[in-house]
Length: 466
Ligand SMILES: Cc1cc2nc3c(=O)[nH]c(=O)nc-3n(C[C@H](O)[C@H](O)[C@H](O)COP(=O)(O)OP(=O)(O)OC[C@H]3O[C@@H](n4cnc5c(N)ncnc54)[C@H](O)[C@@H]3O)c2cc1C
Image (cartoon, protein in one colour):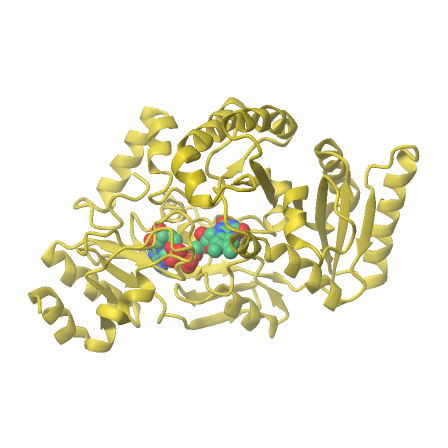
């Protein structure tokens, strides 16, 4: 037994220092793409324990990998295979300290699972408006560390925009706490924003105060099919103008993604489908009339060539949930169908068509028959641009023989069109080289300086992001 583990067990107890088979679930990410080996897994129960663990491990100079729900998609939350890194899991820190109905906010520990948080605040007539397909496992600390987005960004913003305060422990155990939850506070530099999206490289988030919104009285979902991406983008612009604040989600799926959802599709598949959500404090009848009037307007605009081919509106809360469950099931269905090469990109909306028109033939030239499975948060310009192998080829072969060329092709086209190769999944280990390859040297240099300032010994998530 090593001195480090003996010391940690003596101070925190064996139940908080896992090794061997007990540590195994923490050493592997959700998709099994980044398996590693940890020296041990630490499970603090309080902010004070996080501070004590970081101080103690600093004495031994060991590296720390902060972990929440371990649903990250870029290899940031699992240890590498050196067997030297310690995983610091925030899982046991899952207390909701306060739901403040006066100023609509919630103060909770970093290990709170998103779905649990959403459920708890419902009893107060509030909504925690961050929603991801991984919300059954993703934690508050994780969504802040990755500045997660999801399906409601269009209306409420991503994790950064919802955060009112943060509590962070630095690598040397120093506590930085800003949990006043003030909506206006201009006392110097806003350090909070540096930690949000820093993927565990600057500090360990132990708690946060997050904005809530009044729970909508009514939510409606509609599934529409369309002939072209041009129609999808027209429809989005029109929805924004006509539905205004009520529009809270606008998700798109291409034909290959719809094929994965068969036979559960609500209407016949088409080149594109859109799942649109409206939510509001209005009465159901008013919201429904607003939606129906807008759809009728769209049909009337050009009766010869309607902008959408087919539409179905969920008629009950159960149907609303069914339509969303279908959308949320896409990542899992992709995995069951054999998997794909994933790219999480964002583009200005007005170049999205040009991007697809240029990138698809370029990809087919690399691997004929390749099947792009495109879906995502179209309203935010965010596409999950995934590439499934052609019939007869497995994912390992696609990855090994063509993965690099395909990803390079996607990212080069993204850059040419003024987009980002990482919209909401982060950098982690997966996209580190791309960051170094494409970011302006001055930006990289200032990121390194910020990292060195907060974590001079490079102990927090080394080898991730930078
Ligand atoms: C099915 C599926 C769907 C998804 N959909 C979306 C989506 O729509 N939008 C989106 O943005 N993401 C999505 N993701 C990605 C993922 O769920 C998010 O990145 C999520 O925010 C990760 O939260 P987590 O608690 O699982 O963090 P982890 O995976 O445990 O960690 C992610 C990163 O944050 C760091 N970290 C975790 N906790 C802390 C902490 N307390 N302090 C400091 N650093 C920390 C880790 O070191 C790591 O670098 C999806 C993932 C899956 C599997």
